[in-house]
Length: 350
Image 1 (cartoon, rainbow, N blue to C red):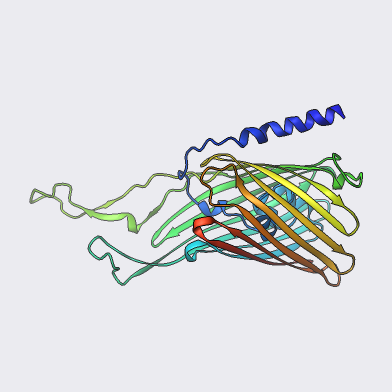
Image 2: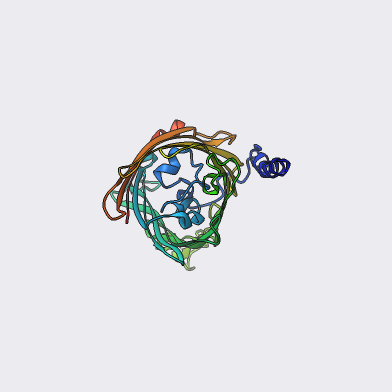
């Protein structure tokens, strides 16, 4: 029992350190769409999902969670974002016995069409331009033992603004440990879960394209020189939003039909202060019929000036024949001054 207390104290030390309010480097990274969160179940739990993820959305939260998928799965998510921005996620994973789980995932953000304006034509030139971001990745998760798993995702991150483009290569890695602590059934699989992931470790993004070309007259007050020489702006390179997540979750109640899980994630990003995400999930299991879920959480606790807050949602999983099931999930979150955001997921296992 004494060793258990010492172990829990060691786990809480980094959590308490991460929770300190020390904002730094705010707004110094690019590809912010990688920080939004994808997967209605995780979003409804306030993004406290790094140790809970065990479906195809583990591609985003923690690739080690892919190792705990019981069946192959495909899922599609639509998440209308603020100011008419649309975000979406599509993923599919195949469970290969004895090898692990292989998965493909795509995150896509569409910023819509915008008017082209100039200093002289601030109401618009009549032209429009589009902008979008995406991340395409391949993931792998495997159990080393029944209680320990690791996973990794290699991905290509791309961005396009009118005729300009930028790209980067990134890596996500994660681990998950199932312990026997606080198991309500004395089964290790129902005990406390500890997980860690590092997301978006990779190269920097640098925009290039014809929109950066502009005629330059290096001596505008002199005649006879090279006027209107094609010149090109050279933008800075920008880091990706590196995120370190440490998560702990446990089952407060676990029976054959009911389960209540509680989760907490500590976040250490490279572009903001540390914060905590809190979440809870209730599961009603109806054998041979399906499952029903209710979820709630709080995102970015202790983060200064955060517009995030309470989240909630729910979902159902309906069993069909031959291990096939249909999954539908929903999540809601209020982002303060930025408005309210809804997330819808549809998937199936096979």
